[in-house]
Length: 293
Image 1 (cartoon, helix red, strand yellow):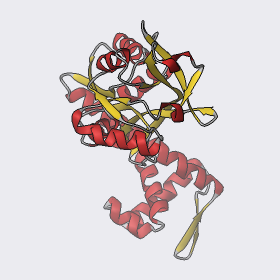
Image 2 (image 1 turned 30 degrees about the vertical axis):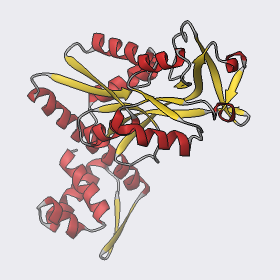
Image 3 (image 1 turned 180 degrees about the vertical axis):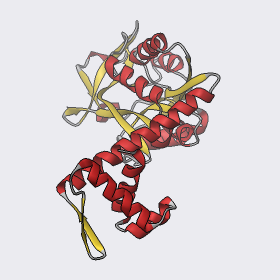
Image 4 (image 1 turned 45 degrees about the horizontal axis):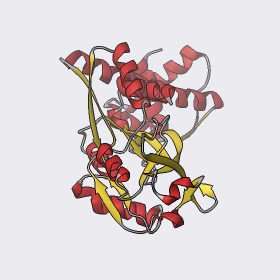
């Protein structure tokens, strides 16, 4: 069986026309018909039932179509990746992650991946949700660890990692630090500290205020260390998500579960990458991070 015959068969089915499929394959209609008949002869079964100018698939033909389509797609990916590996002097994987990420699993996944694939150079970029989305969209990064704020797009692989529980960190000296948990309503008079760049402040505030329901004022920190210093000085509370295991809150800081109503607030985190840019190493890294989480 020739891969070319499989391709002809798939084209005929998808075009629902021998004539149109022949045009797309740059051969004559009689030639493509001969190739389909040769394929049926080799298999010893009928794939297509012809009725005048129309046709329909047999059950075996339907099975053969779907599996041929999958196989041809995999061969195309393998060919493209082989060419890419042969042409790159240095293999690189650029990963984006959220500025407020506080877990260890990403670091462990990178260490595990690097040990397994020492030929790949890992580059790391952090940023806000919107910044990471833009970097992924314009091709600056290969994949991002990000929270889900939009409906999933068919242009991307939306690899769901975890639905994590939300917490807040406040100064241990704050009267609310003695509670078992805190609600959004209890926090509405205390400033919310957001980890974000200056240009993304308005976007982050809008999401936390209008989508998640945080009230009160907002103050901003450029990184997690600065955010913790603001917490220690009693300036406000810092939202934290448990993307995997969290390190201890640290001296002078109390970490409490954050409730919205009667249940703990949860958020979904995913790995995103463009389908058209999917590579072996991207998928391998995704598996490494899954294993850590």
